[in-house]
Figure 1 (cartoon, chains in turn orange, red):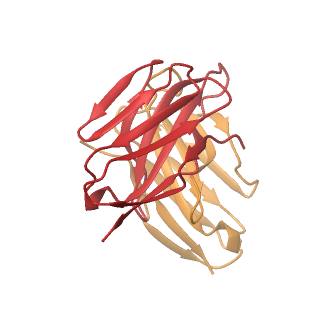
Figure 2 (cartoon, each protein chain N blue to C red):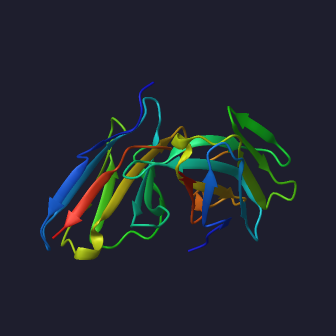
Length: 115
Length: 113
């Protein structure tokens, strides 16, 4: 079965550069979520979108923005990168943002290294 | 932010042993999920629980949704080397306005040679 696709898998950037991460949800899934995971930490929720509208906002820095497009894929844009932004970034998708069965399925992640 | 209390933090076991880990919360949850994460990979869903008291199995894995809706446990029977990884519990609080998953800190499973 098709899974959540994230690209790129690895990304190396310099401080103050920008980065764009892409997420392609499971077909028919209309909700995407972005998480940041530092070493040894649990995933920290950044932001989510349902039907192309922001549905929830977590600890996303002002330097980051995201959107969901008409084909339901999503992009996370990160500007003025800092060393502390180095982490694994995961995208998850679900069928709907609410209800007892909106299980989130995760992509393999993008490892961002800021030098 | 809000976090589930997941224990133990890590476990060192012999191959073939049974494993048990749990998560507790001070608030009520509608859904409990158990994920496994391998290094450098995304969390993979193992078991989803929707009703208080529900007991669900997935092969050698068994998980239960606590009757109080504030806890859940995951058991792994007869562990094998590929069970190594970090296991996360995650839950959806009982709230009309918040659909974010709340995560436990993870249980790192290590199999002793």
